[in-house]
Amino acid sequence: MLFSETLVVLSTGLELCIKHWMNEVYQQTLSDQLNFSGKGLHTGKISNVKILPGVENQGIIFKRVDLENNNLIKANFSNVTSAKLCTTLENEFGVQVSTVEHLLASLYIIGIDNAVIEIDNVEVPIMDGSAKDFLEILKKKEIKKLNAKRKYLKILDKIELVDGKREISIEPNESALEVNFQLNYKNNVIGNQKNCVNFQFDDLTDIYQSRTFCLFDDIEKIKKLGLAQGGSLDNAVVVKDDKVLNDGGLRNKKEFVNHKILDLVGDFLLSGYRVLGKVNCYQGGHELTNNFLRKIFSKKKSYELFQHKDIIISKKINLNQSTKIAVNA
Image 1 (tube, rainbow, N blue to C red):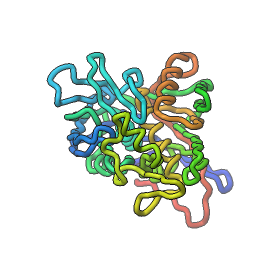
Image 2: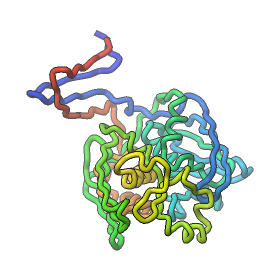
Image 3: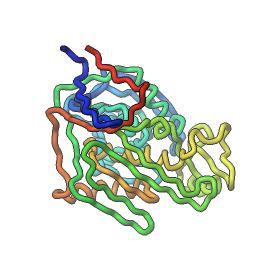
């Protein structure tokens, strides 16, 4: 019997342990280039972006095509030079690209390991403030599997970072990246939100559709810093007192904390690897995440890098009489 996907099912009562060979064994890239344009959230300037297929073991590289020389910037946590309200990367020549986190989160979610991102300005477009538009664009192209095996960063021991009232930690998880995030605001609309998401098994729709947000009372302060020059209700959720100002309100009940999870996974791709571990984060943000990645890589005995011949993931599910499992023969 020939199978398009090898599937082994072990039954124990109403629970099944499903083990399957995952596509993520091999590195992936796009099959063809794609293009899009949009306004930068902080600069307010239009950027034209082209994403090109990458080669094995290349990772994600930004290329400032508006500059002739020294214009390549590796998407790596060590190149983060600012994390104030967005993640900014800078190469050794002082060339920058900013607000990279939502696009990187999209690449993480869709499974792209290698790509060259050409951009003709300093800031990645904000689009609608989430990763929704990026994913819709990316899904227009087929994913190409490469010959090299994907590299994983597996957490072996718990690592913690505390910065005042902000905390983040990661502990072992054999099968996936899991993020447990808590957000606590004095504002009643945002309030105290929590969510836990497994990036291997959970539906990520609410995560990638959740938009960046701010308090109305903070807008002038942010603009005086030279930021949010392109911000509007079209690309950010704005909360004033006890009201969301955007038409239609929130996209989901936990949009605020879900967007923070989106930011975190985008910043985690700057590790250069897919991460296997359970993250617990309280009041986190770009700066905390970047400092945490630096701490992880300083604890060489607390993680390992590896490639699988075949990755076997176990998932328990509950069955009812209408549940069917189909295997293509």
